[in-house]
Length: 342
Image 1 (tube, rainbow, N blue to C red):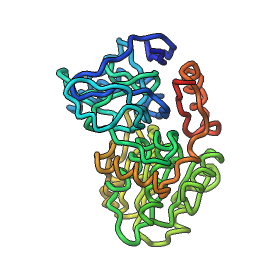
Image 2 (cartoon, one colour):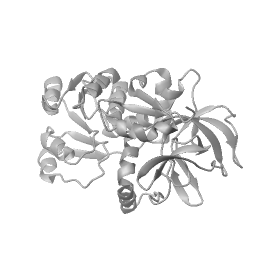
Image 3 (cartoon, rainbow, N blue to C red):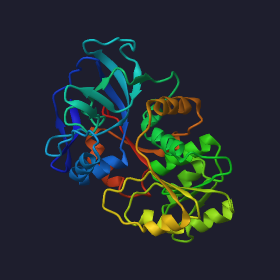
Image 4 (cartoon, rainbow, N blue to C red):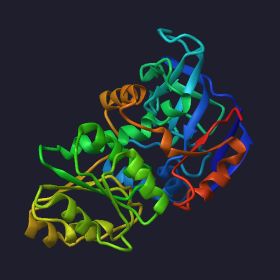
């Protein structure tokens, strides 16, 4: 199969052996796969990701010295079955899946595994257990956004919203947009969102933000105070750059809840006395539960989570390296889909 491969900290297109499904696994053809900000981080910081995972005790088998086919936000078509499968999903069924499987070597993260290629290639092997059929009538490209939108659903669930809470979302990239959509789904408001990019602020409004602010012109906390008054604050950090968490804790109102959804790949510093003096609650989040993933797919199919505005580009396998470069410019794109069949 043809695939975009991470090799020696570079992306290149190559022909690889077709993957073969093992026990309990299915072979699928990739129809669409989103490029995630975590993939951009992995290209630059894969060794650091592995080191942090091991220090945290998280099973993560990636070897940056070996080839990796990334891509974990996908919709695919069932082609064939490995041994000991139930075959409840027929050939030709469109599916989405949590990007996880397990074999004799342990848990594998599809798209961050040397042995299980992700959606930047023409073929993948998935665990039959996690595969969910795409509802009839749901566009393939919309179904492919189940995974990133589930990240927002999980972050909002971890925030433990209560009646009267007023959210502020810092950063309107894909993670921030997913959080805004999940807040809208929960009926939270007013939703205040901040980003330096005019294009991303416009997307934030389309996804459900009630107030958008340019941090270059107004401090986000001031825009939040004008919209929310004295209501309890729930602040979502969705950028992941050093210094931002410190800034958010410094500016947060007393007893605010701070939810960290942005992935900061570098060491960072905060001033604990900011949190102590104001009795802040700090919650870090990662991924989603199987129930949240399935619920997100259903919400997208019902139209209660809008995803179409997020797709701003499509490429084939040959276009993946250029797409990574384009995504470094926040005004150019939000979500680029890889369609390997192109």
